[in-house]
Structure formats: C-alpha cells, structure tokens
Length: 119
Image 1 (tube, rainbow, N blue to C red):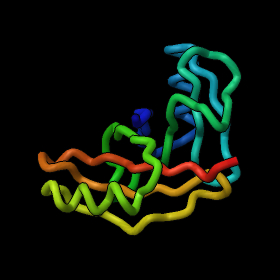
Image 2 (image 1 turned 90 degrees about the vertical axis):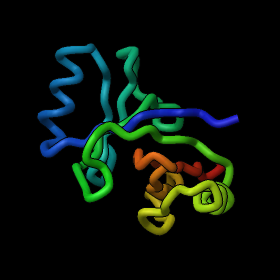
Image 3 (image 1 turned 90 degrees about the horizontal axis):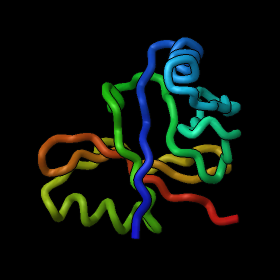
Image 4 (image 1 turned 30 degrees about the vertical axis):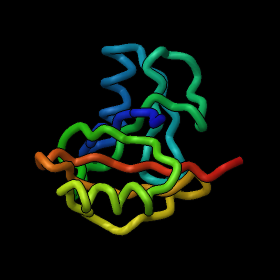
C-alpha cells in the first residue's frame, strides 16, 4: 500500500508558507535546506508524517505534484518505464529523510516517488 502526499511549488517559500498559514491555517516547518513541510490540520508538523511540502519551483515542479511513498524507488521506477511513463531525474538523497525521484505518468502528469530512510 502506498501513501500519497503533495508538493506545492513556490517562487518565494516564505511568502507561500504565509499564504497557506493565513488562508487555511496550516502549520509549517522549514527544513535546513530549501523546503517547507506542512501539516494541513494546523497541528505542529511531524517531520516523519507531514501532509506535504512547499518546494522551490523547478524544472519538474511547475504545478502541484503528488508525492507517492513507495518502499523502493528503484523497483517502482522500473515499473513506471514499463508502463509507458518517463523518469525525469535520477534518484536523489534528501538529507537524512529519504530519497526522491520525479517521473511522468503515461498521461504526462509529474509525480514524485518518495522512499523514506528507516528509523
């Protein structure tokens, strides 16, 4: 079973964080790199269980992206290609939290595969 979260692109992380806090009551936690975790209930952010994040707009993240938590990015990436999808970048380590890789599905929608580091 997979868990789905979201990623929202922003040109200004502080401005976007304030927007979602002020409009929807979300709580946020800035990480030691350019990324903000959010909890859409307004409770303090649990780094291991956040609802999603706000990231700098990038080549791959131009609009909202679904983040799909998978047990093995390598295994799922092979399935993406076999099913007619496309790998957009190589698997990348994200601090001590996990690994990510952006892919396109068969219809051209961008998804982010996420593999947590245990413990």
